[in-house]
Length: 154
Length: 154
Length: 112
Length: 112
Ligand SMILES: Nc1ncnc2c1ncn2[C@@H]1O[C@H](COP(=O)(O)OP(=O)(O)O)[C@@H](O)[C@H]1O
Ligand SMILES: Nc1ncnc2c1ncn2[C@@H]1O[C@H](COP(=O)(O)OP(=O)(O)O)[C@@H](O)[C@H]1O
Image (cartoon, rainbow over the protein chains, first blue to last red):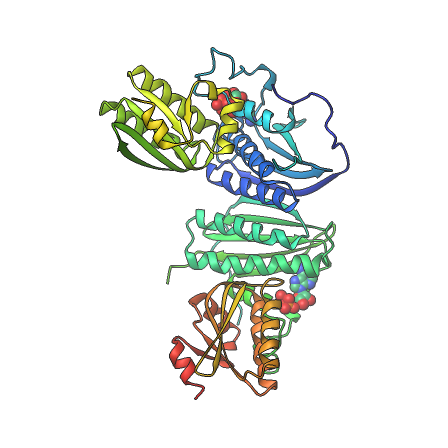
């Protein structure tokens, strides 16, 4: 179903930080972060498919960080990192919330959930990316991480 | 000539951090930083004139940070902060260089300099913004700061 | 998002364009569907050709459109799912609950 | 930046569009001016109407164009400085060294 946490992906090499970004919880800023991330991935030679998968993943995770993590409190910050490990484009998105266990979310493709209005965001992100992780941070807050391995253009 | 360091500007109030951004020294990223900054200032209700003045100022200062501060070394980082103090939109741009004294730069409007190809960047930034400052950082690097006070639309 | 509503052979076609995302698009779509139901329209097509970007809230809103229309005795079909949108419907298996078309005439004719 | 070169009544007009900034625009402009000088063009107008953004390197390059053309016995004039560009030329006092026009016919006629 999702590739997350399955076989090790071939990009555990040196980490190159591209951009780090810290913003308030303002939905108007989500598009800027998405544009910044997708421009970066385009510059790094990823394909249009990779760009659009990450556009979706960054958008969904940003929206969740603001709505669920920071509960729409404008003063609560979101910290975003884009970095490369070999052919993997990584995104970390940190909010000030208490986190969640992605393995406990209902399967939106189960027949009883198929017509639900909600509950497809993280499922889709996991399917469009590799190495999806949610980690509580030592001080406070939560970090959601995912990466996209360079694909061949279809 | 320039308003820098002249009469105190009416925006020494509480500081609200908007966006902080950390990037490698890559000229391809300058436009993204400029777009992010000008979108922020637009969202905060500044006029089109303010946006275009800051577009110029952020662009020039970013280019200088990469070329002169970080001497085009791709690994050297640039750290950018956009924040508000009352009606002033502040920008800090930090590079890893040793800095410069803006008061020692030649006046590009002096007759003997008027036809020079270079030397107008900082002069223009100082004229389009208020509170232009260059500060050596305690550890290493340099911070260039400027702000733009909300103007009336002309 | 922008919505343009038109009729063809007794079928209502909503041409959606732009982004359908949380807070921009989802709400407009819901309003548009309520209006169609209020006006007793039963045969409805969502034309997604000009949709640039859809997020999980936008997808959820299209699912809500389907169930609302069905509850009111109507039928909803989808037209022109561009590759990226189709992928999202495939991964979520929503492709199995929607009737989808790549050709407008076929979509309209399928109601009759 | 894009440059389109055309002739009108013996005057060469370069229509510049896009951004004239460090690394994109400044180099193209320099090449274009060299070519005009090589082809012995002496009456030259830079039309800046479609320039969206110019930075200090772009301004410097326009100054370089002026001095290069003058050194080769030519004349350079500027056409259509839009408000923001005009501000930059005013602050730097470059407005005092360039002849500028808001109307193309006037600019062309001024050479004769
Ligand atoms: N950053 C986050 N912090 C806390 N909870 C989260 C976060 N992101 C997601 N969640 C939880 O996971 C659930 C599923 O999210 P998602 O798959 O995006 O679907 P939806 O947003 O439609 O509920 C959310 O309802 C929320 O409870
Ligand atoms: N971030 C910086 N670090 C070190 N020196 C700088 C920096 N920014 C500007 N300078 C110095 O100031 C000078 C003037 O800069 P500027 O006014 O932008 O004109 P130009 O770039 O055309 O020389 C530069 O040539 C450089 O020596």
